[in-house]
Length: 348
Length: 291
Image (cartoon, rainbow over all chains, first blue to last red; front, side, top):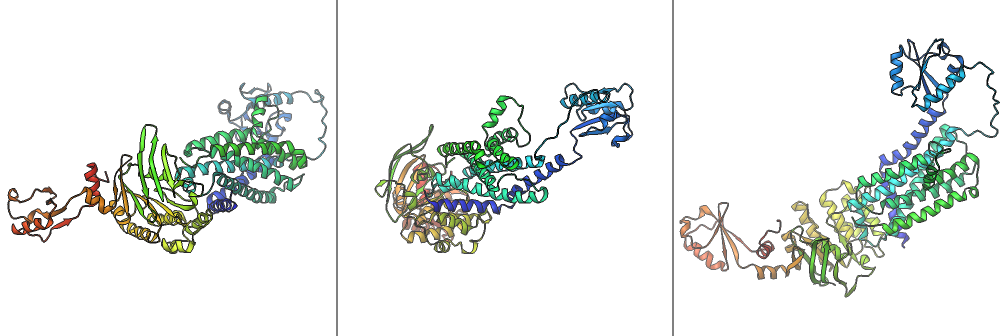
């Protein structure tokens, strides 16, 4: 093991990355745009989850107070009302799931149409029927949530950062090494005293440096706009992101161990990253999902990393509280490095 | 310096290298000459320890190759790529740091004529400049043994001559060189000893002079057809007619010229061609090197 050789490869890889302006820009811009975009969509007051069509109406957009529908229904939050001139126009949109529910305005019988296969339509139907009940008929007592509120953006933000780390690690290590094998860079390096362990270590360290650098810049940039609340310690967050970043880069090593086909590698990276993105609770919680879905999610490093980050960021947990997550990440890292190094080939 | 004994390399049913043996003396330039697909690159890559042999023995300085082998040899591959977005100088520094006892980078830059382009990015240089960079990288560790695999393939004549002069300089420093090529001029110009390969086997071996002397006799005299005023049926030698010219093979050039003069044949546009390695290969295999 030579640190001089390791440093030479680490330095060269970083030079490559920071000089590739397009890749560098995209690494910063992508998470920033996602956070900004979703922050605006889900954080704003105009956000609508359901779309209800009504007819007859001369205009598509009408002030809610001017729509001749039961007041309890039309004043429900998160519903967007869309006007149609005729029943035919409305039913066409309903058939194609462009709207979730269609109702005839001013109808004494409160006529409505809904698709039986639409989950959103089902919910709206319940709401519509509920709004027709006389006031005071249903008894329910609302209680306030005590404690600090976690904004959606505070919940989403660490997920976006972790997802960006995942893509950067898998593509930046897995895809790049396979490309280097294909074009002969690895073969040239194999003709030197550089060992596979030194090369792979340099790749992981270089990637983790890039990941942490990107993370810091994006965090600072986003916090200027959204002023995130971090309940726990920044140092603890750094440790978790660092450990998770190494683990994801090591995952990339396994992908990079063999092969010269960029197309195949691209498929493998997508095959791993897409389920990881959806099942690691980046976008939505898996609460209530099937047991097997949750079990699969536990196989992904992103799940454990994100769980630890959110505990620290949203709940103020300490490192000791996230020891199980960190232990799993360290174990996965060790296994990935062992498998990647054992399978690694310089040649085509 | 290097001894190869009964080397075999098979890929499934294909025998790329078929039981070859040869040795290379220190300080010489040894050439593996042969057409594309003859097994030259496979042979050299097995010796370089890039690919494993199927069987056979490779001795470096009389011993099996140790882990220090890669510290002591320099390799220029036929086709390779480098880390992108790095300048030539940064690439040289990166590779320099991979060795325990590297060369002086300024000296290497001067030998390989890279001074003026050292700040250019690797992917912004011409083919000839890239080959010079590859040669510089192969020399970055002051190698005792230098492998050059088709170093001038794809280069224009001027760039090829330029590369040859650099290799000559390296030879003059006393380095041992193994060179593969399918250019007979290159082998003849640079190599002290040559092994001619075809279909994975070595079919002839010796100095360029020995090979020509052993496998090709005489010279070729070429005359324009219109310089011959007598009927061709009365022409005193056997000849081949190619593109309006007559080719005569002779082992006695003096007698041949005297006879042509006695027949009052105009020799103003005569060409006398000595045999070369191309003719050696043609005589040995019945095909051209570039086939």
